[in-house]
Amino acid sequence: MINNERIVIVGFGELAKELISWMIESRLFNKIEERLFFIDDKENKNFCINNIKVICLGKISEFFPTNKDKLYLGISDPKIKFKIVNQLIKRKANFQSFIHPSVIISPSSEHGKGCIIFPYSVCSNNSKLNDFITVNTHSAIGHDVLIESFCTISSFVDLTGNVHLGKRVLVGSGARFLPKVKIGEDSLVGLGAIVYKSVPRGKTAYANPSKII
Image (tube, rainbow, N blue to C red; front, side):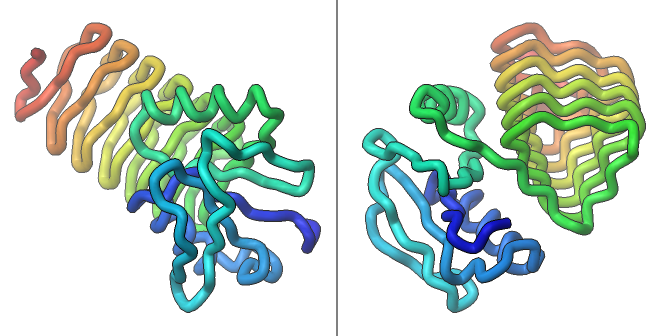
């Protein structure tokens, strides 16, 4: 990465802070301490993580990226991700993926742009992650899984073989999916749910065994 490029984190919430921390820990970025910035519509003060200053560039709604800006999505809510990414893409934002070095990825697995994959996760053979997917720590993406754009997978989630998540699905920590289950777009899977049957669009699955509301 060229030294004068700016690393710009989109968002200031807990996920964004986690992302920054893992970026620093990964040592993938040369002179990261000189190039860390963030944009957020609510927070406008500089802050420090691991003794490294992160500088605010202003509001997302007012930010126009330059060709030196590499953007990383630090937002967990799928619907908010969808809205903000589309705003920034219209301004020619250059979104990047961050995959922690500890992640295990099959050579036959694919991922799109703007994906964030945190440590100790697994992407198994023939899995496909579309654009702007977030996968938190210790989650397993099984063989032939398809995750459509803007989904967020929390920590310790197990997506077994041939599971299909539609667009903008949010999966809570510790959820488990039986093989071949399909989750409709804009749905929510609650913390610790055991999903044994498909979930229609816009619904919530929770509990063990899962119930749909």
